[in-house]
Image (cartoon, rainbow, N blue to C red; front, side, top):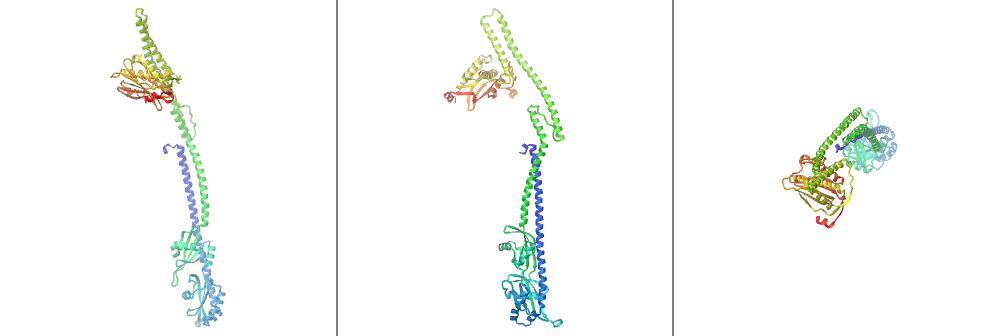
Length: 593
């Protein structure tokens, strides 16, 4: 298919494809760069979120250490612990808890026994607290994270003592802490602009996500909840997130590993990317339109001179030397245009010389043939005229001689008429309505009187009873020429000479077929058989019979062709269109069929 494309089309498509491809690649690279930058910004936000929580936790831990230190130095609290009565301690300890303002407050005896505890929210069970507090008082140097009844607390413990030096007496322990609940999660989320979740042993205990998203996070992101992970993309509830998890405390004997999961939504970034996509599409369309326009301009600049040259070449091949080429485009194309103009001038001059030579050759050939035939007729007329001048010739012979003179004059007249037909640029037909059968019969009657038809059997198959609108004189001339050629060919055949003529009605017209028993048309002249002055094997004639018959058939809108040619059988067919048939006797037509 590409072979049939014009150069401008191919160049336009190639340039347009190149521009579009470069535009798409550039916009894709720009989009990838923006997406990479967006992801980098999100990763940075996640790291900032984690760092924000670390800073917040460090501040709370320092506050816990200071508060436990201050509480451990209160004389009233120490005095309370000296009572060793857990009921008294439980009743009075509530005031110290309210004073501290923490989410969790407890007092233990010197042996670690839990004397009193207080907490905000739902009441915790003693059993879940005692074991964790024993671990806390064993490492009072730093706050620790503990889970009480599914709630996460960060607590700090400090010993209550009396005396100094070697006389120090242990009175018990004070423990305070704050809950890492939804409130803390919201504070971290607002500071970090991200969602946060506190996870204990793979289970979420607090955070800012909805319950539905928590369930999806728990069911689909097991690795994220069971170990540290950085920059993991995920989708929750149809929204994309960039998630990271950090371990806050490893697994201990009293509880599982504690982690913080930070999830940064792509929501705002997706809006930015959506705007970017729209802008990319608009820029891409504008760039493509500009590229196509530029490609069309370039293609036109380069191909218009070549198209002009191609048009001039086509005109030259059709014999038109008038089309001029404008010199435009690159220097190489202009030089090619100049060379083409020079070549066209040489070809025009050579064609004129060739036409003149062919005209002279045609005139010479025609003159040679005409002069030969005219001499033949004139010689016969001259000789018969001399005989007629002899007064001693009988009347019967005089009439025969006069008939020969008439035949010679008629032959010369027919030859001159044929030449006059070819001298005209167009044939003006004198159309008239004539019965086809009568036209054929008159033509057969005329051919029977010709000397070349003597001894030849003429077979006339009855013609259809129809009326045709033709130039009867010219059509009879064409049929006559074919019959005469057939009689001349049949006379040169080996067997008994015969010629037949048959007229057949066709769905789309009419055919007149002339057959003969001659030796056939030589293969050397079959291609040029219907051209003027083509003749072979005849004693006389200028070779205009078939050419004139073809000329007359085409003037009637029909054609003539050689159907078959072999030794003993040759057939010529004149085909006339259906518009030449005026009316048909239906009964006779049925009999013919």
